[in-house]
Length: 283
Image 1 (cartoon, rainbow, N blue to C red):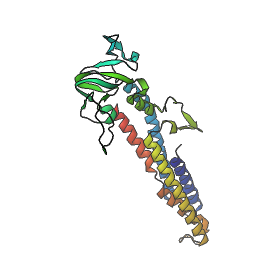
Image 2: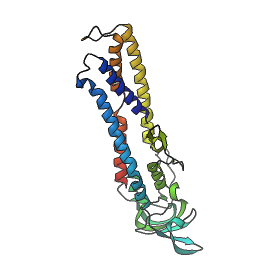
Image 3: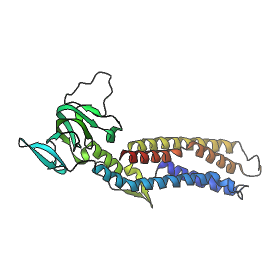
Image 4: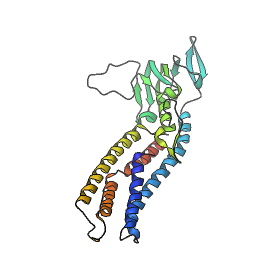
């Protein structure tokens, strides 16, 4: 369970308890903050479960992005072999309509163009060459080198030859499949956190970084709220509508309200929705 989600659940419980001890405990509107947080957490959990369910379908779609056979050069002869039998070092012949069976480094290319939409989202075909152009100073590194073609990409123009450098789950499309499946370099066992699934094992780099950001903001918010609570109790700040209530109860409500406002509860939901939509569009 994410750190931000735990903070939100704690804030929701604290908000409900404090309001239940107040003068307006009989009013349903007093519990709207806690109820709203619970609803956000439940929606996020539901979407996360749905995304997990769709992961198997996405993996199956990724595996289907490769044709069953391809022409290779073995023993000086061109032979047609099954894609799963290809190994590193094989020389693969590419023609229009072929699906690249593995990550290849081109050694021959005649006006070769491939569709890399599955990898980069680029809708236009990308021209490839066997020449390795030197990188200019200050020029950003390209996501897909011009002398490389990648597994799962369609050859839309020209013909060429390439040497296999990576196969299976070591290819770039295979790494995408690993991220979707929740595997980290072959370590794909799902962990559990109490009665809830621990989705940290299959978190993408974006989710990990945003989780860290949310945790830092949450810790900072807690520190600020504790300071405000201490100052408020020391100054004997009371509820203006009920001066007889203890100051600590009023300051707890103020601190919880500030914490809920500061904790980025929208981060888990927005990231989950964005990644699930992106995964569906990709496959």
